Amino acid sequence: MSPQVVGGAGVQMREKMDEVYFKYKLIDSNQDWNARLFYADNQCPQLSKPSMYAQVHNDDWNAEPSTEECMQVPELLRRIAELKKAGLTAERVAFSFLKA
Image (spheres, rainbow, N blue to C red):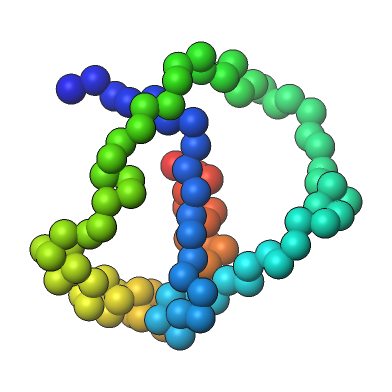
């Protein structure tokens, strides 16, 4: 099985579910976003050049979860609650994606 090249990933938080999931403030507007940008010089080692591979669509990305996957939800929510009690925040979850 060969690896598939993707162009990026997104994280979507469910609104009004912060009691169950992590607290995360959604941006209502993107106005004046450029005022919050910062620029950094290239550091060594520099990022590699963007891949010229086209994104490969996977139908599973938009598929509804299976019955088996839905049955895992209560256990996953229990684990999330434990991590929240231990101090894990939405920012730390997002940071873990950046480190990977």
